[in-house]
Every structure is written in structure tokens, then in C-alpha cells.
Amino acid sequence: MRRLSIPDLTNGLASAVPGHRAGTGGVALSAGGERSHPEGRHVHEFPEAFLILDGHGDIEIDGHASPIAAGDVLVVAPGEDHHLVSSVHRPLVIVWLHLRAAE
Image (tube, rainbow, N blue to C red; front, side, top):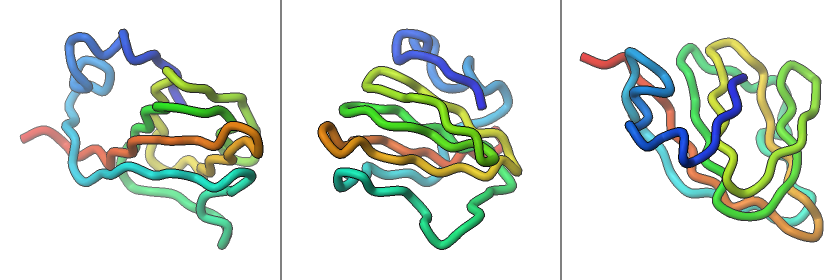
């Protein structure tokens, strides 16, 4: 996983993840204490970016937790098992983007 901040994206997401562009995506509002993808292992064959708009919590990458907060931009590498865990007191609001190879 790579950690950036929103100002790091002044030249666009393509500069942060060369050779890729945004594909599908959305906005997610987490309930306090919620863990994304609770069913178990969650991986992709492509990078995924998360823009943390509000709140704080943790990101679990291959079983290791790191704190995250509003303003962070996270780029999860292909094959990394990843989950977001929202704070009970300040739940996460995120934008997620599945990245695709640029054409």
C-alpha cells in the first residue's frame, strides 16, 4: 500500500499511479465500527485507490493495521488483502476507485 495526501494528486491520479486511470468507483459511508468485506479475504487483480474524505479508522493490509484519517489517499496494490475499519466515534466517508490500465 502507498499512502499519499489529497494535495499529492494536484497532477491527477495518473501521476500517483502511472499507467492507470480511474475505472469504476463510488462513495461509501461506513457505520461506526464497521469493517469492510467482513466475509474474509478481499483482493483485486488491479490497484484500488481510497480517498478518505472524513472520519478515521484503520486500514488492514495483509493482516497488518495502520491508522487512516481524513485527507489520506491510499493506493492498494494488486493482490493485497485489504479492509477498512471505521472508528466508532468518527466513521469513515471514502471515495473508492478501481484503477484500470490506461489505454
